Image (cartoon, rainbow, N blue to C red; front, side):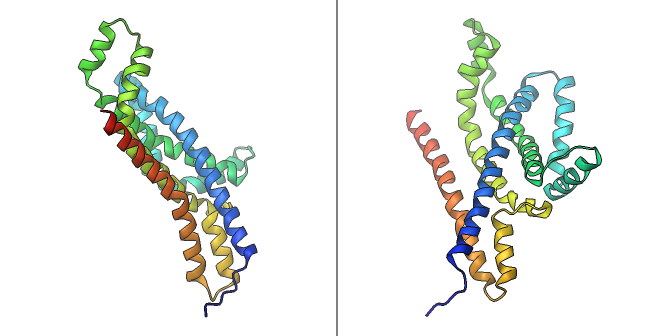
Length: 218
């Protein structure tokens, strides 16, 4: 008969960690998507002298490992005389990190819309804003969605790194339990993995359903 020392309180502790994981992911993806849209549209539509500096800065966030970014931001903020909790630092760094990748997704989606379609819209008297809102983004969204879903799931898993600066999210919660109950590491990690799956699977299926619905309406 299977016997375990994992109690309901331990499971609740893991679920609390999962709640922090979801919260950090939601804030980071929301902020990163907004910034990514601004940066992506700017890089896709503005002159090189405007887009090139933005691209250079975003390349830094894409090139430097996320763990190093978290540690550096968490270390330099107090040095600059500012106060920020590890949770705030985590959300900020992950949002900037997400925006760097999201900007490329948006830029690629915008550039994928044929120029002939855009010229036709402008010839009908649409302004730049109307063209982007009514023509470009509805078409580009179908191209961007799969990559954006993948990015969201990746950010959720990357939240495991925030444990290095003191945030007790899902993986850190499981590590704390493993330290306390050293004889059941595989079982605890299996529970954590199951929670990650239960969080990720609905997001992935939602993206697949939206893609299927759009294909049916084409």
